[in-house]
Amino acid sequence: MKKMLPSKEEAERLLEEAYLKNPGPWREHSIVAAKCAQKIASACKDLNPDKAYILGLLHDIGRREGVTALAHVIDGYEYLMKLGYDEAARVCITHSFSIKKIETYIGKNDVSPEAYKKIKKLIDKYEYDDYDRLIQLCDSIALPQGSAKIEERMSDVKKRHGYYPQDKWNKHIELKKYFEQKSGLDIDELGIRV
Image (cartoon, rainbow, N blue to C red; front, top):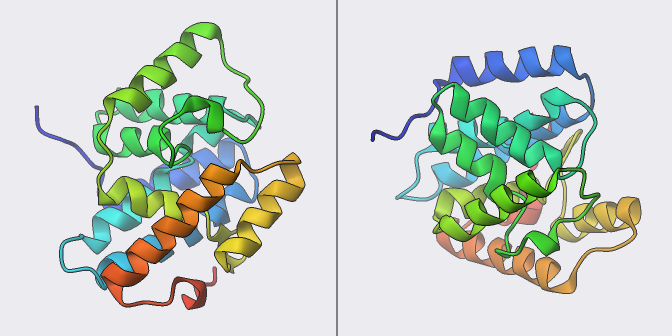
């Protein structure tokens, strides 16, 4: 089966449509994540900047269904799978699990036991590639107003949710170092603004 990804224009249209359905700062966060992913991918020989941008734009598309926590990952996955965009659907799942354990999700478990099992199964099934890792990193540096230092963004999440698992924190620092080495960029100084 051929892996499918929408065009940049289609991804932008899907994001705008989702935002109209459920307005919120998640739209700007997604745009910042997309621009960060594009900039980092542009500096990496083996990554496609357009693909990185599209995946960044759509990683939180499940938020179109309303203000949810864990549900946004499976809602986004199912929505994009219905449209035939399996590559983008995959990132709806993988972006929240830099450590391949569903228990590391930061936020409320607001899914049915069946959906929980499905998310867990998908996490276990995917062999992460550099696009999965890149969107995990970009999600962890993207604030609605622009890119932030990784510790600043993770501290913001910790403040809002009351915790941030140490192993996940460490993994995001590791991802930052990995992409800094790969791209030659200083991730804390990307300077992306909406």
